Structures are given as structure tokens and as C-alpha cells.
Image (cartoon, rainbow over all chains, first blue to last red; front, top):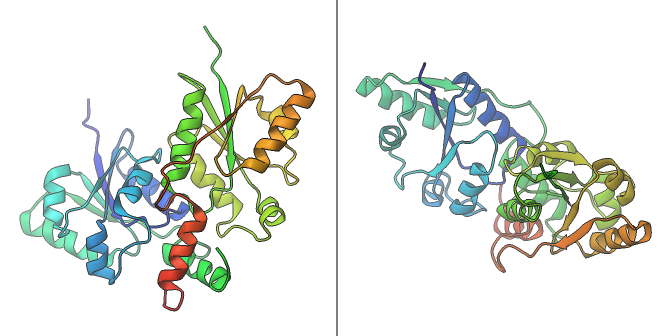
Length: 152
Length: 152
């Protein structure tokens, strides 16, 4: 029997929306039938370091919510210093799926994989829809523009 | 073999958070082993009528996200005029689980069930945790207070 493929996806998943689910479903699909999807959820400290501020939702709640999705087999918190090789060694994926807005991560992953000659396929997933509330930033902007001066 | 129980839960599920998942898990648990959980997701128009404004996330995205949760067997949009009896006739639940903040709905459901002598158990689910980001309103307030004047 062919070994099932492990797909690794990652993200912050602050304010979970349907675009996240579509990204994860597309990622899992690349692994074929019976693929296992492991999701790395970024630590609060990593997000603070990369984006200058912590996410709205704390890391343990973001992780639990991602793991509560049907498409996800396991959700784990990332390494404090986002050492991609550590994560790869731990989860041993066949495929790493990066999101449309994860160019930094894609670069780091491709570099790490090439340097060590690890046989991992790196795949970029397209954006779900061109418009609508398909990013956490857009959702935040909508909340602020609608409710900024009022009681939420 | 004993018939599996159908549990009906409902809500708006605007800005999905882990408190929602806990409410749904508790609701399903009441139905015992193999219970089926059907979730009614409130229409945008119903929320507008009840709370004076539409949710941040549109109804089709809120429904899809709720149905993407492991604990949920089926998520359906409510009736435009929130006629509880219509929903009950359609889904034929054994149990209706109402959330800690759904006193209006609890009253309507209990009244409808009593008036028609329908053998449905109505159960109120407690709040998940007393503090933290366990309500959509709290999350919106946090976003506004942190990012109100800045680029989201």
C-alpha cells in the first residue's frame, strides 16, 4: 500500500475566514487521497517580530480553532524563532503548501529545502476569490470603518 | 438499534472564535454518542432586524465556515423571518441547544414547543470561560481599540 502523503501548511489564522479553509482544502488536495494535513500556526511572538504587532486572537485559541476544522488533521504551534528546518524535521512532510501572501516563507522554505537536498515539493496555493472578505486585514478594516466610533 | 439524536444549535457566528466551537461541542454532547448536530446560521437580514446592523461576514461565508468544523454535521441558513417552528419542522430535532446569550431565542423556542406540545428538550449551554476573547463583540472592540486609527 502506498504511504499516505503528509502536507504541511502554515499561517497566522487570526480572525478565521472561509479563504483560510479554501487554502487548507487546496493544500490537502495536492497530497492526493488520504493525505494528512498538518498546519503550523504562527506564535504570537513570531507575528510580532514579522509584522510589528501581535495578532488579535492569542496563539492557543488560533491553534485550537484551526484544529477544529474538518480538513485539518493536526495543528501545532510554530517554533519561537520560526526555524523552518526544525518544523520540517519534526513533521517530515512530502509537500509544503505556501499561501498566496507567504512570499517570505516560500523563499525561506525553498532555500532550506535546496540547501539540504531534502526531497520536498513546495507548492504555492492561489488566492480564494479576488474580492470579498478573504483576508484578516480586510475584515479588520471593515470592522473599523463600520464600528470605529460606535459600540461594537 | 437506538435512533441517533438530532441536536439543533443556532447563532450568528460572525468572527468565528473558539467559544463558538465549545458551545457547539457541548450542544452535541447532550445528544449522546453518535448525535447529529445541525446548526442554524442566522441570515444577514435577521441579524439586521434584531441588532440593527448586518454582521461583518456575509451569511454564505458564515454558513460555510461553520459547516467546515469537525463537530458540525450540517449548517443551514435560517428562515428570513426567523420562524422557529418552520426550522423545527424541517430539521426534526430531539434537542434544541441555546447559547448563554440567546435568551430571546430560548423564550421563543420554549413558547413554540409548549404551545404545540412537541416533545423537544430545550437545553441552555453555559458560557465558555468568564474572560478572554469569547464573544464576537469583544473581538471587535479589541480590533477597534488597537487599530482604530492605524492601517489594519
